Image (cartoon, rainbow, N blue to C red; front, side):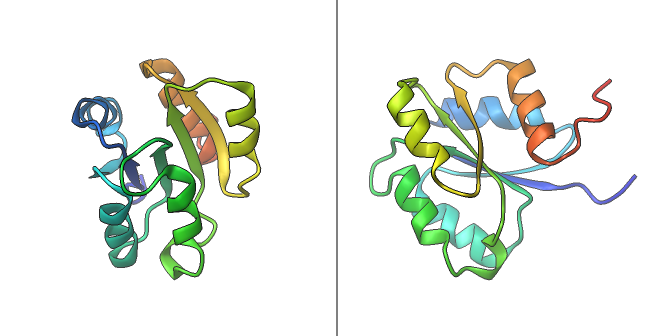
Length: 129
């Protein structure tokens, strides 16, 4: 068994962060950030394997966060999964234009969907039993 991968979850709602942590902490080291600025300071200090990113946050949106990641050595090519309560086809299409965005999860988060999409984004979906 190798080193545990670190996942960074960014959401301005504490309840969403707690849900993600509870669902993923058995398999991963889960880092939590309530803002894009806080998340950037985490990314500057350590390498994460995956970012779970809310789109609508005060101060810095998910799209602005992705722009701010450019040029940061620890964040190059890190896969991103957007997590949002907005499911409009236009927003999902816009999100898919960002190269690192691998998937899109619609809130409320369900454990099965979260685990499946996280494992797929990390290319770990071979055996989830």
